[in-house]
Image (cartoon, rainbow, N blue to C red; front, side, top):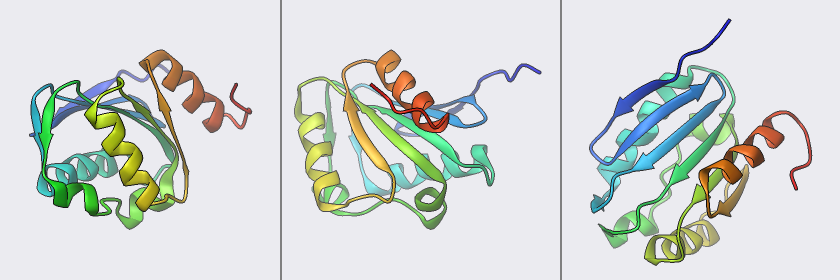
Length: 136
């Protein structure tokens, strides 16, 4: 049985359900991050994965704005906290990478979070985590 990817547009991002256990969030360039927009993205992830455990990849934009309250706030819900097995962030060496590093330093997660430079690297790491292999 082949699972077709599904795509879900939100105010801030395109959320792709690439497989039953893999979600990729691609934030739009020039986006203005805020708590309501992030909550919408998380809600879509929870809805499209149902009650299954999953890996999540977040692709951060090169340019955009962020409300500092959104950096200070923990956005994960109970559903995300208990079902996300690993979270890969993909970002260039810019502002959003630094803000993500700060955010996850102050808001440690129950699952492993790791930063990558490309989506294929992130997918390989997530697949290894979901398959129970030790990633390189």
